[in-house]
Amino acid sequence: MRRLKVAIIGNGIAGFSAASALRSLDRESEITMFSRETTPLYSPCALPDYIAGEIPRHRLFVKSERDYEALGIRTRFEKEVRKIDGPNRELIMDGGERFPFDRLIIATGSEAILLGEMKRGVFKLKTLRDAEAILDHQGKKAVVVGTGAIGIEIGIALRQRGYEVVLLEMLDHILPLGLDRKAADKVKTILTAQGIEVFCGERAEKVLGEERVDGLITDKQQIACDTLILAVGMKPNVALVKEAGVSVGAKGGIKVNSRMETNIPGVYACGDCVESRDALTGESYLHLFWHNAARQGTVAGRNCAGVPTEYRGSQNLLNVEVFGHHVVGFGFTEAALHRFKDIDAFGGDLSDLSVVEEENGNCYFRLVVKGDRVMGGQFIDVGQRERDVGLLWSFITQRRSVGGLIRILENEALLKQKPWARRLDPFFATEKGRLSMNREKR
Amino acid sequence: MMDKALVINPEKCTGCHSCEMVCSLHHDGECSLILSRIGIMKTGGGGSRENIPMVCQQCRDPLCAEACVMGAISRNEETGALIVNEDLCIGCKTCVIACPLGGVLYHAMKAYAMKCDLCDGDPQCVKSCVYGALEYLPMDEWGRRKRLKGAENLVRLFDVLYR
Image 1 (tube, helix red, strand yellow):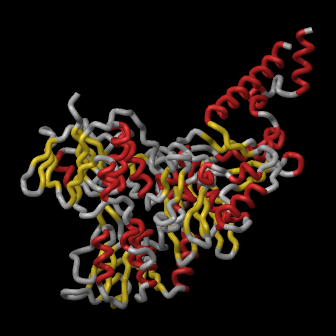
Image 2 (cartoon, rainbow over the protein chains, first blue to last red):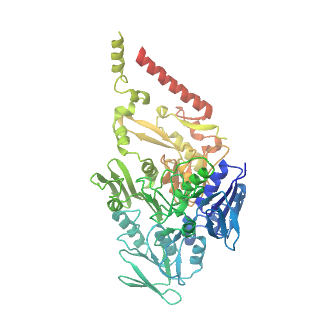
Image 3 (tube, rainbow over the protein chains, first blue to last red):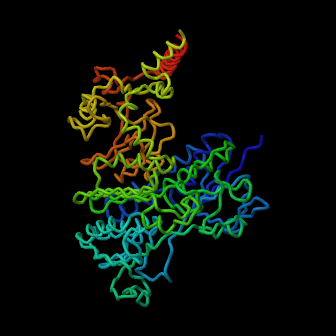
């Protein structure tokens, strides 16, 4: 059999997981990885820690060049793929070089959404290069537009570097995708106590300054600053694949089936560039998170090697450390449930929605439950109970009902019984039942 | 590799916490419930008290390793245990949240994730457990016991049905 030629575009966690999953099943095939990055796999999630000076540069790297060699992956870094020639099964490089492939895995990832042109002093944070640019810049006052996890983390990192920091959010509270109003206000209090100014419900309109940034005009005020960080959001990198005829969904990501296959046979896609099935609702949505990308890469790699594997669905997770306070959010917020109530999984009916809430000082615990299914949770500083958060999070993926668990835990008799006896209940599990059986026989 | 497994027999556990003490003593040099990789979960109350020792199950398809943004969790090929590389871990606690069993903990003093490493093939908690609730068994022996238990249940079932 001819050796399979597999090309992977992208050197993120999705691309690397795909390569290692493929290699673990297929020792023969030829794997070539193209990337516009110059370095081996690093973790973009740790970039704020790097900016804050908490970890040195070398610790950002998750893999070294030796790891690629050990897996037998040929790397073509600093090579930008210009075009994918679908019908001829070829990649066309920068400079006209052609690379034929049998299978292709697209893991081009995502890029930051920008507002207008980039002036000096305006930054985004997605790659190592962006982080280094921020570190090289000497500024005093920074405005961060957007308060998702990245916005909050970069704001904290800059504050730790001695900047004056202003956070700007368009919606009515910070961390809008992860937290409900009440939890978000608690985080806001922590941020304000550390000297970070937070403005919610304000929209950035114009960046001031000729060559370098002088300030920012919002719909309510004008803020002077010498550093502007755009953390508005991420969008999938799909320009390359659109030309090749790979279909792109309504949310802007590559459309894939549950085996991470695109509409072109033999072409897979994984990571931030795809829109995937939500584990909770089954709707197609953008889930740009590390753990989803890692799983999708593994699924794509296994299917590429010919071992059918299904993707179990994506989950969202907010996990940030705000000045020593651990903030976690997953699944739907109450507000989001109201916004999405018309989709099939909910059927427009939210009458059985309930919220379990506990509060003690800074410690906050909130669980959003619909019917008997966990829909989402928000936790601040739950301490040792953060281990329990994992159980609740797994309820989302497995679509398990809490009712069953509560019934078992509440019913003492059920707990006492041997598992084999429970299945036979109610006929002959008990002593009484056994007696009656015996009597019948006689 | 991976020829042995840490087996838990909850029905034998009395909830004495000695495994937790020994675990934290072995890894951190002090007896402390919050530094122990193994934890006893107590459910119910009164007569229906159940003690269930909870510890990392060294999953074949680990969620913690998948969630780790630094790739810090990897498998030790000799013991089969999933190990946190302390040099790589940045203490973001994503693995703590990802594990449905509460198998990964956060070391508050050293600021990194910690989990059961099977003590490099010589689990101290097993030695400390005098009730036999924790055992470190070869895989085939564990499998044999499971089958035996299943057979016993079947025998009991027949006993009930046809005696």
